[in-house]
Amino acid sequence: MKVLLIGVGGVGEAIAAIAKERNWMEQMVLADYNVKRAEEVAAKFGDPQRFPVEFVDASKQDMIEALARKYGVNLIMNSVDPIFNKQIFDAAYNVGATYMDMAMTLSEPHPEKPFELPGVKLGDYQFEKAKEWEKKGLLALVGIGVEPGMADVFARYAQDHLFDEIDEVGIRDGANIAISGYEFAPNFSIWTTIEECLNPPVIWEEGKGWFTTPPFSEPEVFDFPEIGPVEVVNVEHEEVLLVPRWVKTKRATFKYGLGDQFIGVLKTLHMLGLDNKEKINVKGVQVAPRDVVAACLPDPAHLGDKMSGKTCAGTWVKGSKDGKPREVYLYQVADNEQCMTRWGCQAVVAQTAFSAVIAMDLLHSGAWQGAGVLGPEAFPPDPFMEKMAEYEFPYGMREMTPKAA
Image (cartoon, rainbow, N blue to C red; front, side):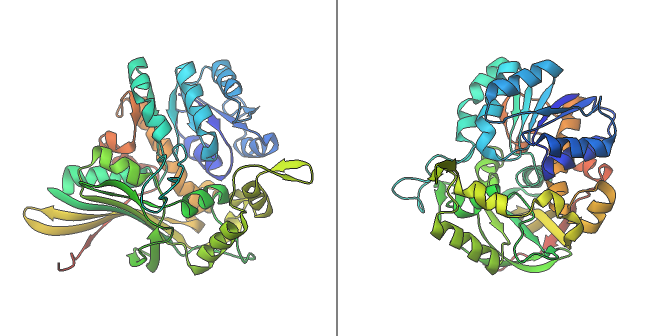
């Protein structure tokens, strides 16, 4: 397989590091706006033929298409902030390559009732073009990181093997990660974090469809394996837009453990307008406030040696089996020390990256096949989950005691 990797930040590096050991990976082009960063990653691998470096401006669709044609790639892997998704998605279609991303095209809040009704939903742009992709016999596999991605595979697995009827698919994410030397340092792209945490969260209910709530709504405490109790809140996320398309459930939610300090910082950024992704004039220079915030914070790709702790991602499924109530939490725990030792990448980015690499493996082998714009739930889950242990990211399953009605 020949892959054009657009974006060699923390997750991009982890994708390349995990794929490096796989014989099916013939070549992965490391393309980034920051060529120095891409060269830094390539130097770790010591194989310039297999991991060539290229400059790319992800906002320029023609540049992406030119690189894809230059290297004759089979797949374009989108590993940049989702503001560039449309260009990369359309470039893959034009050159006839498989497309993959870990976050779908961006949403736009409803202009009049943002905390009640969805406006433009995550992935709407991509799903509107599904018929065109299907007609051309091409596959766009969207949302194949950890969340969305692995969590969606878990939802499909629960439907296929663990439940007769599902009442709710609830994605729950929590961590006890600490970063030494920083009062505030996100362990993932702050650009993406601002987008998903400050947009109105989406919920799906049978008979009602998708609707929204205010940010950080419906707090609850969830007991995470190997971590313990963490307060989680509603956050906008792709799983809620993906799961109901292929998994029959009465409700779908996503809740994330952010913490009071993190929520406070995000609210302050919003109050000051620093979450704005549109450019403004600053003394004659056009700059997006959110880009300034990102530039002021440390690069998550270089925080691994200062991080400690674990992160847990998983899918809490409630329903019934054989006429009896059942609740199951399918999950994966990534330990930062182990990820740094094994991959040279911090836990959050490594956990995000491994699903993309497993998906590439399954597409290459033919275990996963399809055409159109499809989420991870559209594919058989068993091959993916069997690969998790092989890739040293084994999953766990916790039976939970259903609460009395």
